[in-house]
Image (cartoon, rainbow, N blue to C red):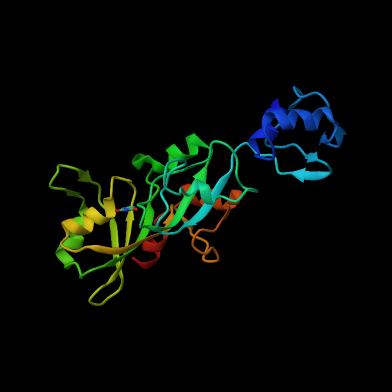
Length: 245
Ligand code: URA
């Protein structure tokens, strides 16, 4: 249970001061009854709230799937345009940040949330939430080098990287390779393929855990993640590989 003014301000509909005004003016209801006391407490996960007759989706945290375009940084603030800057007003609320970073030139699935515990859960390598990337390579990587990436490697600067799951999706002079990693070290995928003697020309994150980027989202677009989808993120993650092997 938490104060209604605090909860409403967190939903991003208005500032705390403005929310207090709305409440005092009798424009807010909870479970069908008008609330005029700003300190009135409601259950943030289960309470029907309206403002000016319109239902407000009250929830403690928000989880947003974005198809990150190139040229935007995975941060919540800074000089460059950030992924949080792209969140539309109806989904925006204070405290949003991207759970994990993609390079400025990487595209694809970024999860934006205000739930720090959840972010930690999906980012911590010990939880084995694999991130799936599609990498367009400058040249093919020999089979033995692919094996090394699968077994885990140590980079020349001493950075040790856990084993990845690697699969060629499209053969050719500049193959498309799918790679799954559960860590998020600096430029990790690019450095892995550099160590294997190639170069990443394009990088796209397709999946976090068991949840794929919605193909209906154009670059720069986002939408809320449903509770069912959220479960897929931390659920079984090897399904792609298990089905094949
Ligand atoms: N690995 C990289 O090299 N870059 C990214 O943006 C993500 C993973």
